[in-house]
Length: 320
Image (tube, rainbow, N blue to C red):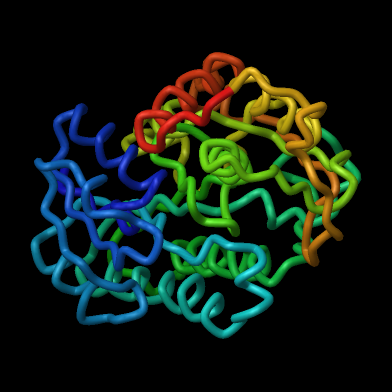
């Protein structure tokens, strides 16, 4: 298949591109390198430096002939969504609408969309199934849910003259190699590892008792690749998480231990909580297990060790 990966120079997108190429697919990547990096792009991929908000940039990829699109590009910072809400809206919603319009123009039959756990907002049901109420409490979550609805409403249009099959993945806290170590607004584990490698204190916003569900990148890629040609996923929305949660305090302790350090070293500081933060999240992945035959395989301690090994090759390890 000829597959477009938007955001394919970024953390998740570049790993997905690698996975698709391993399966024998031809991959085209569009990325504006706001958070992505060109060295992440597989050498086998066709790379177009472009922006999903610019229709002409995207059309360069679609004009090459596509069988499927994996739409991952987006503004992914919760805090940036509050400080620059119009940018968040433009990238996440307008960018998705551009992708959809080109799918219709070029009759691309398959689209996989990167949604988010943030669509659930403050869910009282833990673990949270896909049937739970979506009431996002952050601007970012609102744009991800709006985009998800655009994707599925487009596939349900009765005026289409071709079969357009879509799937959305509500991804939880994805971690692993290539996660940003220098961006203070995305990827809490990457932030913590970057802090420790630069010999900076780890900053926890809030009391640290809030919890997150961490899923390793290879498990996420496996789900996306297996769904691509699976008709049972058409029209579906699936959680991708580990089904377990860690508090941010526990995460900090794990990160410190990876560098043979503890809180006694004075490495953890607390700051006021930030707007739009969910208190607790945990994925119910029953549906993905049933439909995809998928399950998260990477234990957190092993995934953390792999991520630390990669991170210490990027930045020098601090002295003990």
